[in-house]
Image 1 (cartoon, one colour):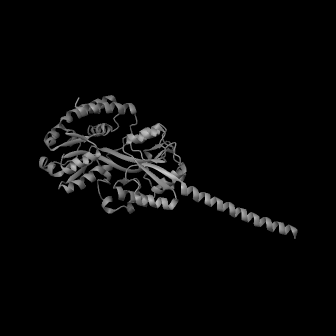
Image 2 (cartoon, rainbow, N blue to C red):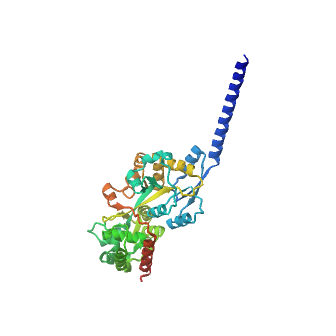
Image 3 (cartoon, rainbow, N blue to C red):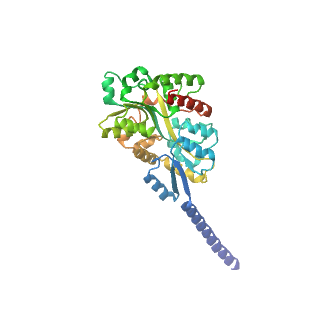
Length: 371
């Protein structure tokens, strides 16, 4: 009788303390989740407000978002080691250099099961052996855009499909008075000329740099301006220039602006090939919330969520399954999702050599000033 009583009392105590422990565990888990905040450094609109709210409501993790002003600005913050971001959004080719410098933590892929939805062709470009330091998120292309009314009058029987309309003096002479805008980024300019001349887009030797510089100098007298992204949109859309070096997202905005000025803008991915830019998801090596960062990355990679991002920002994403949820007007827009034949002509800029980049920048400065 006494033994049974002791056993009964011991059982009651065990159940009580087990329940107490579980309650404390749940409370700790809820409190931790409630007070965790991820600090994100991303491009404008890459996390739509609707998606941010959904993530915060689902996980209890709050997001503090800072916006990148340039790839150089992101790189500077990472190199100081003082900016405590949990997730950053580097672009090609900078991401390759960052990986070599050890600026990113290796990803724990078992914590990101939704990586299964990311196109393997994209992932393979960023693997270092079996380790992955970043995940492709959104992508687009570079090319040029032009005013169709102007070009139809100057080149009535020609198909506008080549870098020659940006770099060939014979063609530039005919359109110079209407305004030609080159790019304000030296690396983009050198890569584009590399495609036109059938060099590899990763300009990799001093000899190649010299040849490209000579070609640029021959075209230089016909370029009215070297415009940044926002300025090129404004200039082409308003009719200040007739042709401009552009990324595909800029071309979409130039089309909208052009419609207000009765200008029809056409975007071209040249037949010789062009760059494909990719923005990545990465976790800095000193991220304060390494585990929670994986939670957000996995959340973003769900096909419906990737589609929401594409529908909001009008950039293609790396998840093929998301196409089931993308608006038809976006999915069928060749500026955003080019045909497969065009995709084969695209390449990623993978050069990550600071010394080579400095050389390109020195040559580009001389081109800018007409030296």
